[in-house]
Amino acid sequence: MRIEPLTCAIGAELMGVNLADAVHDDALFAEIKAALLKYKVVFLRGQDITRAEHVAFAHRFGQLEDHPVTGSDPENPGLVQIYKSPEQPNDRYENSWHADGTWRESPSMGAVLRCVECPPVGGDTMWANMALAYEKLPQHIKDLIAPLRARHSIECTFGAAMPAEKRLALKAQYPDAEHPVVRTHPETGEKVLFVNGFATHFTNFHTPANVRVGQDFTRGASDLLQYLISQAAIPEYQVRWRWRPNDIAIWDNRVTQHYAVMDYPPCHRKMERAGIIGTPTF
Image (tube, rainbow, N blue to C red):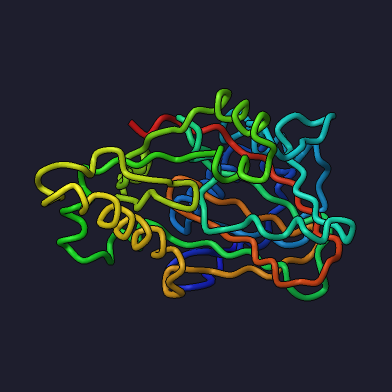
């Protein structure tokens, strides 16, 4: 296996690898996982594998998860089908910088994403290194956010466009989750800035140390949260991948955020993602 880093901050392309082989080859899988932990997201081109092989490879990292809003392949549970088409001209607004499933008590560990069909130009995906984003924060911000926790919601993101009854049912099934603003990566020990587009508010900001009078609370906490969320948009922390059919991206969801760029005219963009169940953040 050859590894070619793509930026100084995040991302590498793996060459000379067939993921179907890694389903049964422990040494090859270990090499791929080591590269993933080092580079946060890794890419492979020309992976003409079956859906069953896709799922089997992802399953080596752990159990797979379905998504309550986006449909899965009925023959391969856990293989979520993210399909955009010309017949869905309005289904293009929803993206933001995010880590998958932080509205769960146990956010996703990672994912294996395969491009089935993509526009000839446009439709790239970007990833950001949130360990580097934390490292580069000013020290006084690190001190301020060290004890903070934040709520993450599926209701006000995926549920926002739903009728009220369906939205409230979704919230009942997936109540808002609470996570530390600074998470420790369970395998590398890195400190990670762990707020994204699913985060709605801090749960323990309103203390005498942070608030002079009650009026400070809403504006002060909101401004700080938006500042932290905005760190993913800094180009020096990012890598951008231009898709071809049968490309695969594998990312560590515990230390990255990603953004699917919707800059293409209405056309087919078909991606299939096997998401891996993670562990609680505290």
